[in-house]
Length: 110
Length: 111
Image (cartoon, rainbow over all chains, first blue to last red; front, side, top):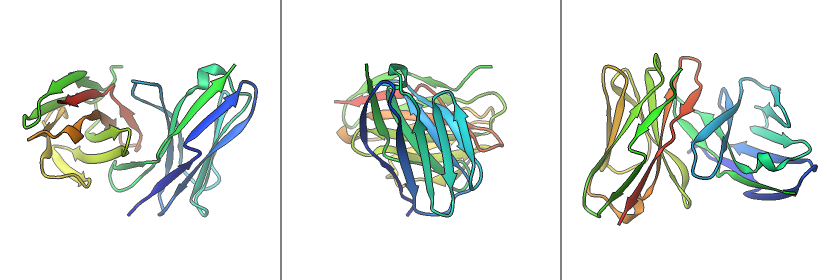
């Protein structure tokens, strides 16, 4: 059974600080996804990581993928309040079947 | 370009009733997947339809079913509703590049 684990589950950080969210998955997958979800809203795609060593950056967020370790990270640089949300990683299996991590609820404190 | 449209946005049903949710994917996308999101279980895959055929199925009881029409619109049905079926149901539309775009979801409350 495919398992996707994220940590931490909850993250409270001050504005301006850096932090990393970790995503481990239990079986091989050709790509890794990161999504953002605001309360009561849908999932917004942040990154699609396609290969080992892939790194993508958008604003204060940077995602990386190590397929050998089955590990992806989402690094937050100099956090701002607008980044407060829940972040999910996901792996794709056959077809378009996505398995999601538990999510990391991020709160950025002014 | 229109996004993924789910209707209705909110539903309140009584235990034992059945419900049908609708999802219209992005134009040109042939794959539609359904997910259930609850605080306790997180996001769980229900099933995927591609070109009117169920291509993958998650670990949910047979009360959960779906179908896809020739225009790629999809519906999911839940029969004999239970309190535990209360959840946010999300539909995702996928293109040939394996990206998934999610709709706003349908919030189902079973009372």
